[in-house]
Structure formats: structure tokens, C-alpha cells
Image (cartoon, rainbow, N blue to C red; front, top):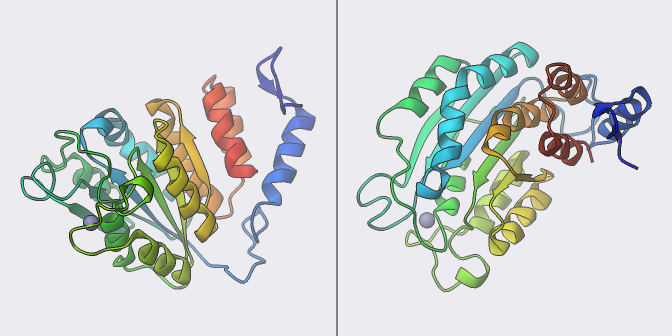
Length: 271
Ligand SMILES: [Zn+2]
């Protein structure tokens, strides 16, 4: 039974309670902001890892348009939160030779800095690459961020291609010798959860994104519409910070913005 009343298209009261119960069971924490698990923390450090190759231009533009909204919402709901960004491309002529491999906005409390960074001219989608992108090097850059030991820590990785060295692409390793498995392991040791967001349905990407989320205690999410990206980034940060994501969902619902694809994201986060 779905918690959403399809006849009315609304979240019923009992459904909301059961939704909340599932949300409360998520991870090692209560969802009222009180931390019970050993992983606890005050405040939030969250880094968005964005594939900025050609195939991702619609999604990059959506984040650019809504950076202020995203940063403001997180800052309002989560005291002592900081956001960072790693934009990545690939090795070779379509990536680092002509543009960049990774561009990093360090973790900051200033949403304006994140917006300015993402809207800088050098962050450009450009042309698409081959079967893999430099996800492993983006993860390495994320490992170098100044994560606070005392804070909750999350990465939201948004992309459509796997890292070098993954699965079918195993023969085409990273030209800098970076292994995504080592980077994921290092992040897990620091207590950084990796939330992976699959754009498109490339099987090899799905496999490795699911693995990354599982290894770090994050969640694997699928993005069906670029318009869902801003609410997704917000709700992952709220969830990681131990906030009640159902309140955010209820607000979207009241505004007529809780689409089916967004419901799926909330359920995946709560499940
Ligand atoms: Zn690499």
C-alpha cells in the first residue's frame, strides 16, 4: 500500500505517520535532531559532487538557478551547516587538457560563495565524454575538503557515468592512478556518507553508485527530472542533519509541488 492517497494525490494523516515512523527508523539517529548513534555530530558539512560534462548541462543549470534557494533552506533548517562543491569532468582533451579535471569550492557557511562559484564562467558543461568520467578524482578532491570531525558529513554525487576502473571500464583506469574504492573507503573512515544520485539509467553507473552508497551508509537515489534536483539536495542535507524531511515534503505538497517523482525520492531517503 502506498502512503500516498492516489485518489486525492495527497499524503493522508495515517500515511504521514507511517512515513514518519519509517523515517525515524532511518540509520542510527532519531529524526528530531537528537543524535543517539555513535556517529553523532553537531552541524553539517555537505559537498555536492557534480558531473559537469555535456550530458549533465540541464542538471548543472538547474543547480545554478536554485543555488540560493538550496543554500538558504539548508542554512535556515540546519544550524552550523557548510556547503562545498566539486565540479568534475574527465581526463584527456575533453576534460583536464582543455578545461579542468576538478574545480573545488571549499566548505563554507556562505551560500553566496557557492552561488558565485557555480555561476563562474569556467564552470561549463562543454562536450560529453566517453564511458567513464573522473568520478574517482572528484572523490579524491572531496577527501581533501576540511571536514569537521564534530559535524555530520555527507557527499551528494550527481552523475550519469561511472568512475574510471569500474566494471566494464576496468581496463581504462584513472590516468593519475586514483582508485574510486580507496577514496570511498577513506570517506567512510571519516564518517562521510555518500548519497549517489543516478541521472539516466546506465547500468554500470547504477552498480557502482549503489555500491558507494552502501559502503558509506548513504542512499542510492534516482533522478527522473532535473526539476527534482534542488528539492533532492535540500532533503538529503536535512535527512543527514537529522531533520524531519516529512515537514519539507508536506510543505511541497501544500504548494502543489510534491510530484510523484519527488515522492519517490522522499520514500527512498526514508526507507
Ligand atoms: Zn582520475
